[in-house]
Length: 186
Image (cartoon, rainbow, N blue to C red; front, side, top):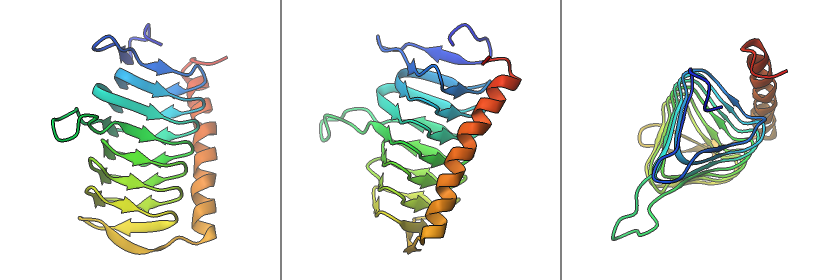
């Protein structure tokens, strides 16, 4: 992975990224520091994942779509542990999202261009709509929040949850096809 000239995988502060061999890392990505990327994850074109002041974990089958930025928050006297960014399994993160110092539980959804700020938490099957900004709040399981600042809009029905999970599976397969097209997988 580190030998690819189109991707930067950089150790920082004595901690190197750990990327599962089945993960798809698209050209233009920058992955720095204490980052763990699980199996069948797809990190799409021109994403930045920078864990230089805390850690970032990305669980299995999660996808981080094109141009997204994931960072974390450093320790402070008022919060010695800072805010790591902890992303569960089967999470969808839309294009150009900003995910910073927060927790996204399994099957969470972050819409295109959305911002998730320090201390925010999205529970399983919770969804932050496209363009929304979550500032230190908690989205409950199966809830949709919208707006800037984000506010509760409604509960998600079974069809919406199923559509999100179909999206996860589609991105796992799409990542495999892109890896093949780029000559990264046999």
